[in-house]
Image (cartoon, rainbow, N blue to C red; front, side):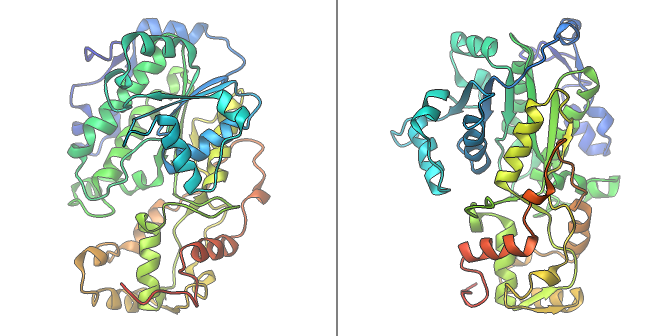
Length: 393
């Protein structure tokens, strides 16, 4: 069926995503493109992409690093981003404020390449006037969708309107006017859902509405890869601070909240650590892939080798113990919200989402520093490095 405001897309049903989640069947997410779009894709022989780039989610942690990387690239002519005004601050002021919190700054030349537009990316036509929306559609040739809720506590239905239906509107934008390539920042957490039993589990911190939303969105986009549309799904693990600065949202991330609990327990279990990627390595992979003649449809920038908690335990000042001993201590934590971060099957959850890295052609593995070196930098930023640990919980 075709939804009125998505004329170029045909979905199996109005609630195809709900059916897919209810049955655990990703084939229910199959999107078809109309004949007009398929002809446009077939006739488009462009050899160069990425001259005029739109970044959605540009005021977020990944977004500001991505914008900075794009502005530094001579192959990119202009960068656009859509940001809401807030507290009487202009979109540009908000962007620069966020950049400053991660030790980033714009040069005068970069400001000339940057276009901050006031709008709302989850609204119809991004909250823009029809004229501005149309002119943007004729100009842009590349879209990066980095915007998302990171609230693990709400249901899929709470996220559906802003982060699933809005993605379909982004797809519609990519097919209107000038044909555009799209890179979507997904997550390895979608791989928690592998069989019908996974879909039947009650919502939790890990098997969450957020994880379901990523599974749906990645499934919708994957269904379009064979159409010839230039689509890249980036399955990212935890995205941490850059290799040079090491700053990220800190304890807003469950990755670091988990580390905080571990330092308070003074115990670490013997098992796989969570995959991650420094944000500068991530955005470089996104940009290099986007600019290539044949971009990969699937990227997974992350640790080149899985690591064991044994290599970081001394940085946290903890004792390495078995999972059963560690979890017995977790059960004694009085606050349920903290206990929920560490379910009994956490080692299995980590193993399901620790997947092999997939980088763009030409990636230099030497640019990915050793895990121990990175962790030392991150923990030092958060005052969690052994010798500087807080005793509060």
